[in-house]
Image 1 (spheres, rainbow, N blue to C red):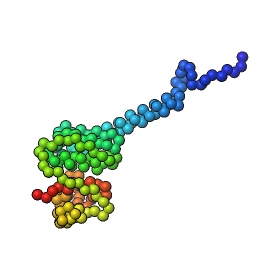
Image 2: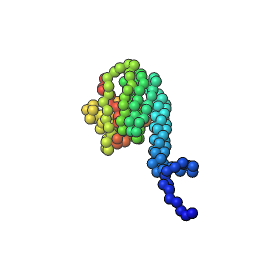
Image 3: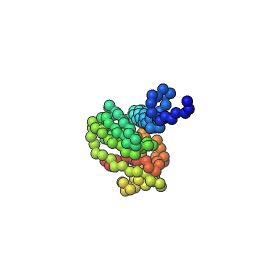
Image 4: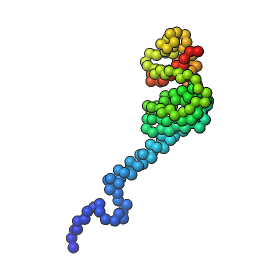
Length: 164
């Protein structure tokens, strides 16, 4: 009889054969699902960290989409809201925080400062308050995220509250 030629990718798929485009689509779907699971796990860890730090936020929700984190809930006060944003934003992989939180007890907003190489809390206090000895104000404003006034790092964002 001889050899007969057929189109390899046509016909019934009785061997479980997948085309390259089907394989690529399946791999892409698997990668997207894995990324979604990782983002959900990261969001859950952030919410756990916020709760562990004792920050009072009712109905706290963190949603991560790529390098964007959206935070919602009702913070007890402005300081709690700002600290919550900083906990999320100072996490590796997060470039932007969409703050959708409300505040139960409004008060003036703090400024934010991004730490650069060579910064100390004293230098930052001198810049914002004109007095390097006011560094404990900045340290206290960033507790419980900061455990030691000497342990800040470039890229970290700190709260700089107004002096009373």
